[in-house]
Length: 314
Image 1 (cartoon, rainbow, N blue to C red):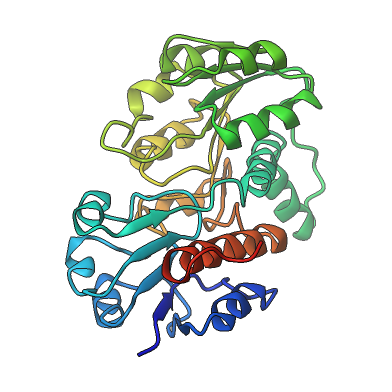
Image 2: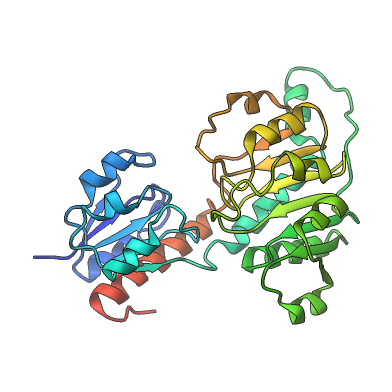
């Protein structure tokens, strides 16, 4: 019986056949997402019964799903966030879990800056106005020379720092684990609390995983600490921001704007968010570039091959 790989991300192998070719060259039977969207829990349960490996995006892999996959040996995450996977249960079963760290770092950092610029300069409402014949000039806020606050200074946070250098931004950061050598070499100032980042920054960008500790880490209290001309950006994980509190802060113009690529539910449940002109919304697409997709696909495929078949060819 051939080994079976179930692939859920819709973009896997979309621009290049290389990821699929790698799996098939090793004799693996590859099944892909038949729905053209994120799978529901019930659809996952119905799909994983014969899987020896799963290459997964944000589809649910909780205990109920994993219990229906008795042959499963590896979960290869197509990305880096693992909050959709029951890691404890996977470990208890001896199921390996890998991520594609680094594959989409530059793409996500680019999109972080795109959201910052779009929110600060009101790119979306200006574009919409012009298309409707309204050529009035809207007053906006600068990015150049302002203070950027990062909550989380891992690989993507550091990639954002590289881009901020071109805008002569002053960078402050909070992270539970400090890289003092990096900070000293790159002009980053660590602060002791998230509140200090929020109160002193013109732009705040989130780069932390979603855990019970970080869920709704940005709520009404935290938003009230921010400057009225500040912009909040989230390209990390949905659930870090209390979306109802964000709506109120943006509606009342307590902060200047926000750029959000990730939501607790996608599309978001609070459809009133769509009516805000000071919110730029993404469809969880920060990592969706041709290059990042190819990188993630190849890396995930190699993780599967390494685990099921032995070391893959570089």
